[in-house]
Image 1 (cartoon, rainbow, N blue to C red):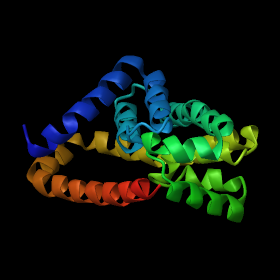
Image 2: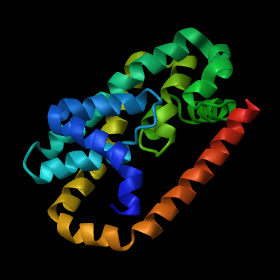
Image 3: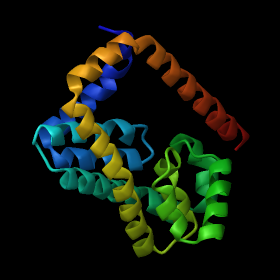
Length: 208
C-alpha cells in the first residue's frame, strides 16, 4: 500500500462505501454531514459521485442535485443552533464546531457588504462554506432566502467537482499510475496545506 493510500483509505473508504450502497441518498447524507461542521470534505465526496457517473450508476445532474440537497439538510440544524443560541452561545462553544470569533467577524463583514447574497457566495468557497450556517442563524438571516442561496451556491459548487470525478473515472488507469509515482510529494503537499490551515484556524480559536 502506498503512502497516499495509507493516509486517505479510511476516509475515502467510508465515502465510497456509503455512496456505493446508498447512491444519491449517500451523496446527500455525506454532504449533510459536511454542512453540520463535521470535517468530511466535499472535495472527496463529489468526485467519487462523479466517478460513479462515469460508470453509469447515476447522472451528473442527480449527483450534483443530491450534493446540493444534502448541503441544505445539513445547514438547517446549524442555522437554528445559531438562531436560538445566539452569538453568546457560539462565542462560548463555537470552538467545538471549529468556529472562532474571527470566523463570526468575517461572516459579519460579508453579510454587511453583500447582505443575504453573502451566503450564496460563501457556499462556493472552500472551507468558508462549511461553517457559514451558524453565523447565518446568529444574524437572523431570512431562513427561506438562506436555504435558497445555500441550495443554489452548493449546486454551483457541486457540478464542477462531480464533473472532475467523472473525467477522472474515464481515465482511472492513467491516473492510478500517476498517483503511485508521485504519492509522497502529493502527501507532503496535502499535509503542509492541512497543517497551515489548522495552525491558522486554531490560532483564532485560541484567541476566542
